[in-house]
Amino acid sequence: MKIAIIGCGEMGWQHAECLTSFPQIELFAFCDQDLQRAQQMQHHFQGEIATDDPALIWEKPDIHVVYITTHTNSHRDLCKRAIQAKKHFMVEKPLALTSREALEIYEYYELHAPSLIAMSAFKFRFYEMIQKARTLLSSVYMISVQIMDDPWPADFWANQANVGGGNVLSQGVHGTDLLRYLADSEPDHVYAVGKNYHQSTRVVDNLSATFYFKNGISGTLIVGDCAEAPLVGKFMVQMHGREGSLLLTDRLTRLKFKSATGSGIQEWKGEESGFMEENRHFLSALLGNRYIPSTLWDGYMAQLMIDSAIESARKKRLKEIG
Ligand SMILES: NC(=O)c1ccc[n+]([C@@H]2O[C@H](COP(=O)([O-])OP(=O)(O)OC[C@H]3O[C@@H](n4cnc5c(N)ncnc54)[C@H](O)[C@@H]3O)[C@@H](O)[C@H]2O)c1
Image (cartoon, rainbow, N blue to C red; front, top):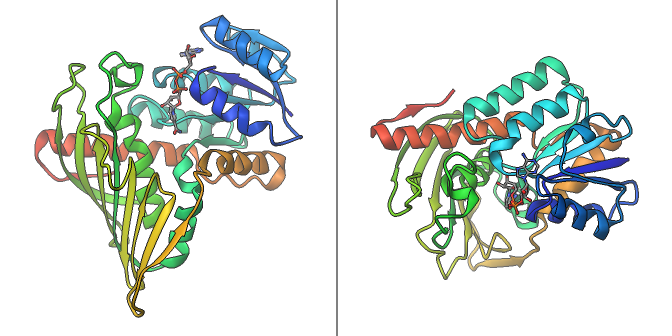
């Protein structure tokens, strides 16, 4: 299966490294607006093509799959081009710059090529300790997710409103997707507080949002760049339910569980296995099982949750979702 990577930066390399573990895959073509970056990857992975023109990828019938790992402002057009060219694709999060654009991608896909395997990359779903947490607590009442980073540089592309949307969108979609995945339900409404605290880019840079899901579960997301919390690390999750409470820290690799019935605390340590596992699932869908574990709809919903939370914070009002 011949694969093209469009966007030869950090995520392009990350996915390509994962793909080298699968003998069914040929890392065939590399595309970047900066040709040198494409050439570096082509050389490293011994691919056939390095280009700065995505048209070359779309017109090649023997390229079956495309990874879209460019900056967020280019996702909508590249996804639509992949759909027109009938290429299966994985697109990095966030699906687009706004939930309106994300919905446009989803609807375009549903209308023109719903049989394609199209996956929104949401690595958190696949972490070993996230999967463990789901087996420990099947009846959950409340979930909280925290993604707290050190202050982002003002000139970082992802911090620009019209390129990456700022960290609340860019990282926050990991959190909203995880809340929705763990709650196993669609969100009904949100109440949030947050604003631009310090970024000269004027994006909302820190946000605290509580979502109420249709099945009654409450999920809170804290996301921003106040400064990484030293005791829990950048990513933290807590879940409380009938069977007990659990805490995931250290980038979701360390899990502590206190059962409601037993005494003492059980602990597990896992790997940051998200990237590898999401690629394994994508490949498995491509090779025939067709199950897409994080869809374009999931990409849209994660983004709608963030947009709704920002609107709630701006208007100081509860916001219905959907
Ligand atoms: N899943 C995760 O944990 C995670 C982590 C970081 C970034 N991301 C996402 O991955 C994507 C890429 O981020 P990154 O950190 O790899 O950025 P990066 O800057 O390291 O790489 C992006 C590359 O895309 C190229 N590019 C930009 N627009 C292009 C276009 N229209 N056509 C061709 N090439 C183009 C740039 O030249 C650059 O080489 C973003 O959507 C980001 O939000 C996901």
